Image (tube, rainbow, N blue to C red; front, side):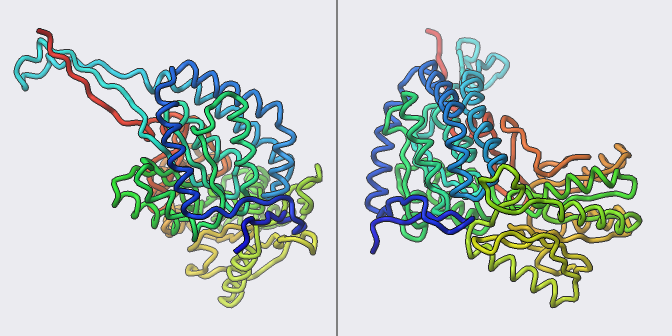
Length: 468
């Protein structure tokens, strides 16, 4: 068995680094080290923790270009988008430092308002929030830096230590982020990064008795399996899972604007965002006009090297992703749908053609599953009710978008759509890092966001004092 795993760039398949192929025993040792880190970080005054987080933010900004290039290399994210991700990560650490005093301030209760138990007029009752312990953070390949920040910054802010397991497709960014945190003054035992194959070490970062909470961003099947196992062991979970986010374009929408946003929402990062607009539902009155505008804009995108400043779309992450997209397209073709390849990338690397599907059957994979790649299914509907029915027809419910000039109509539809967020006249890709983010149905458990994550990552303890 090889002791190391080579990491290849999805854009040209060249080796860009290697990471240790850890064993389960090695991961167990890392978790034990993290527990020692919890004892240190939880006793550290809050002002020291927040100062470290602010320093992390400063270093990320200083190292921004280097981190962005690494992200482009290992994850295939176009360099302009990679810079945005790095900037968001820097701001997340700063936001965590700012929010922590508010989350941890506690509460005083007027128990003299209650007759029972007797003697409440002589009691002071307060609640305080305390850290859970060791947090297991399981990262996706598509946002290895920002997801690291979303999970690690809140955990450290409230006094937890963290064991990070990055995707084996993009582990280098997590290792660099840990180095930055140590440089900023965080005790080395407070954040550990474990690398290896999930089939070999994944169970340890979930079932180890020292782990108090698992926060994961990943596929629905993986997340639900982990959540089931974790909760059976009495552990907390935050699961940010899959989505098949619908974009509804009504006949009164501004077609040029709606089509431009839909193109970006569907094809940004080769369609590999959890809140990408994965299904486009258009009123039949404007379907032809919308499809024409949409397809023309896709043809104008530049597909290629992620490090090229002119690149809009890069590769998908690996050969398995290519195979999944081929299956989706073939399923559509076999059911009689029209398949149009609108744009192609280089021959070398994991580039999948930007593809549009129309005339789909309602049971097509493109409409029922999470299509995590550059394939855009477009469906024509006759009524708002039909649009809502299709929007709600999957097991997912992360985000959705409605384009209309009639705000009253949009709000009425928003009430009927079963998603964690409904975005009117803008992209499903909108996300505010300090606000709750998550979905209905099988799109998640709990909510992620700086403040919400801190609340999930702490225990609410009640303390009662009886005055003598």
